[in-house]
Image (cartoon, rainbow, N blue to C red; front, side, top):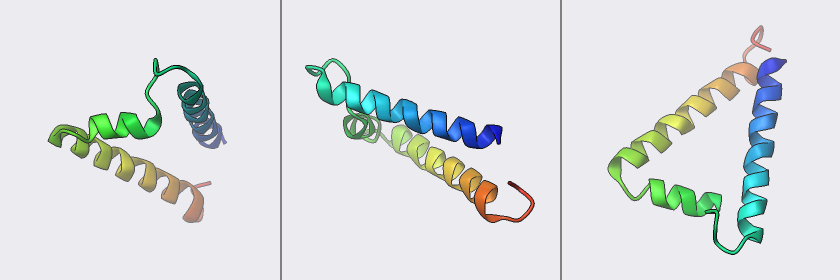
Length: 69
């Protein structure tokens, strides 16, 4: 249950930051701009790929395998 709450809080925070970035006058980067900046370097692309794998594996394990929910 705590894991689910954590993922929901993380998603809500990302949504809040995205809304704030779109409403401000360029002071905060949107998520697409942030990913573009990070992905402009090889190390950033590696970090993004590892983060994608981490989230995917944890969500897959949490919500699809019996006994892990």
